[in-house]
Length: 450
Ligand SMILES: Cc1cc2nc3c(=O)[nH]c(=O)nc-3n(C[C@H](O)[C@H](O)[C@H](O)COP(=O)(O)OP(=O)(O)OC[C@H]3O[C@@H](n4cnc5c(N)ncnc54)[C@H](O)[C@@H]3O)c2cc1C
Image (cartoon, rainbow, N blue to C red; front, side):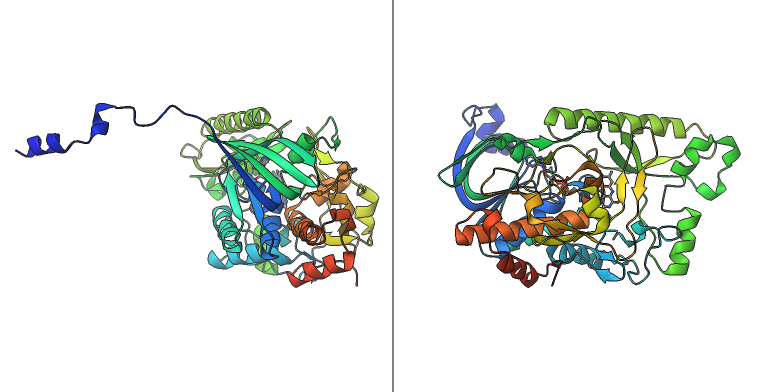
């Protein structure tokens, strides 16, 4: 009886009927004031700033979550927000970071202790966040601010006509035409600038990317290192986490311990096309697999485990725009302040070189670099800005400018400029600087100069 009733109640679908027409791309058209391409480190902050200032804002992101290199790439230790005992990047980026720290009971570094570049390294001032949590908080703040998020979407064509951009995008099962007044490229690779036809900067040699993961299942202190090749010792110490230097520094100077951070370099890693990013991911993942297999052959490491691996290879360097101003190495290390400087950047010059050690140059005491609006605007453009690592800069300056607090500050600055450009119906290069700086300060931004 039971079997009979189940059979009678079985829905039509069990017969394998065709219930829907074959796949077709859904074509949509929307209008917005500001479109942000890329919801990563800079893009999230830009989007929230634009929406909070009251203009219609849309964000497209080719991945499935916000935060970019900070979250999906696994570089979940944004820096540097403080320099020489003072906070230099605040605003929306800092708000997101602080909320992630609080909600995870993480400990902030002791910012009153000033790194001296020898015993206390600059990176002790980076703030460790839980990347997944940061992505959730970023998304919540975007939604609360009223902007529209479109995941899995990328631009394929960008044209400018009669003062408006038309951006054609494709995503899963969708193609959209987005008409906007101002476009902000936060793709990290200057992808939108490239599609729009603006010239880009890039050297033949680029810094390697890193595929980030965590290993466990062994105790470093009880390993017999005489039986393990020296080249693996550091890796087994899980880099910064349990190194003696860090233990001492943490206890003496009251710095929180750093999260475990292990990675394999991926030479030539490039995220500017799906094809190249796929290649970088395949290489990173297969290198990790080989490493795990190798490490498990060492005595004491037989039970070594992969605890976590990021979904994609994090990329350090691809394309930059050629802007109205190109920030130079000299500007950076001298802390030059421009009339249109909108945010700060603080980090050593930090160039990862293929097959060689990292080239680092520390800033002299008291020096903090600044980022002018013109470095965020491609030459010969209208209604177009970039924020993040693809700003206009020479390679050495870029190796420091690319860090996350700087990208967040730029994101907020670019969005504030776009907002005023919408309000005054001008191009971002022509917005009144005084008003721009005061809008930024209103939203917590720390602006160089008086
Ligand atoms: C291995 C590594 C270690 C680092 N170490 C540090 C460190 O210790 N401290 C520090 O502060 N910084 C560090 N950095 C630098 C810093 O993390 C990055 O430079 C910074 O996060 C870049 O921010 P962004 O907003 O420019 O790009 P991203 O954060 O990469 O964001 C770009 C976003 O755009 C999306 N996107 C890309 N193309 C498209 C497209 N065509 N359409 C739609 N969306 C697109 C991406 O999916 C991504 O979400 C490190 C970087 C790497 C790779």
